[in-house]
Length: 163
Image (tube, rainbow, N blue to C red; front, side, top):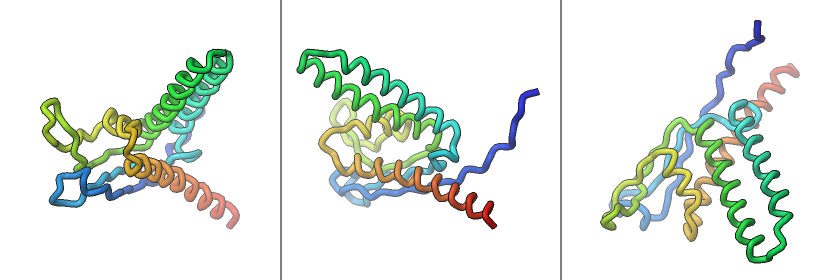
């Protein structure tokens, strides 16, 4: 028989960021809202996904160290940084995000503005946008809130054990 424990109830995070008006429909506040589970040690699947991403990062660093051509090294380094960021956000999305909403406007094939599709691909693509620090900050703040929520639960558990 395999030893199994009941699953722990993981607290949720309700994140909301207001984005600049020029990113939205214009007549209402532009926002991104994300409902998620806490990250960190409290969320086992998240930890395993992050460990896998970091292992891949370390393997890529070893390969990077073997490149002697400066231009090739820089290109590979930039690609590695983007890949590592993408893998981290995918881990958060896959193991923490419950759902998300936004009225952020994107352009369709005919350059018409429309609401962003709120799925995994769009959220990960947002993190890779260049020249839009407001979105990068919002997603970074979201990640921090998920991790902090996990830390607070661990601290609460430790305090309960002490008593």
